[in-house]
Length: 121
Image (tube, rainbow, N blue to C red; front, side):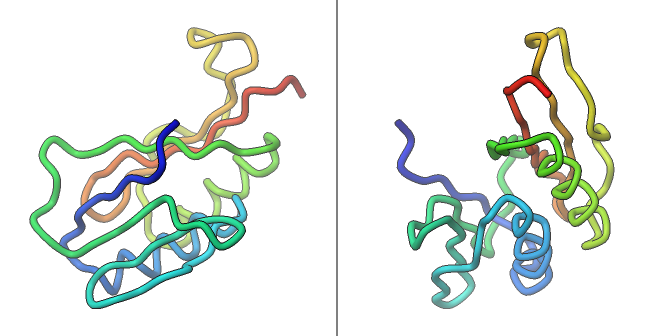
C-alpha cells in the first residue's frame, strides 16, 4: 500500500489553486501547508503532496480513485475549469478492463492527472 506521493511544480501558488479545485470533486482537501509545499487528502490524511521545485522529468502520472463515474466527470470539469489541459475526456477505456472509466488532465507542468472509477455503471 502506498502511504503518500509527491510531485514538484514550477509555480506553487497557481498549482495549489489548481489542485484544490480539481481534487475537490473526489473529496480531497488541502490539509497541510508549509512553505511552498501542500498536502492534500481525505479524512485528515494527506497522501498527495505538491511542492515547488525542479519539475519531475519525466512528468508524473497520478491516478485518483473515484467512487462513481459522476465523480470522474466532475473531476474533469473542475480540472479543465481550473486551467488544466485535456489529455483524455471522461469515458470507458475497455483496453484496460470493461468497466475502466477514466478522465485525464495535464496540470500546468504537464503531469498527467487522472480520476478513475472501476465499478460498473
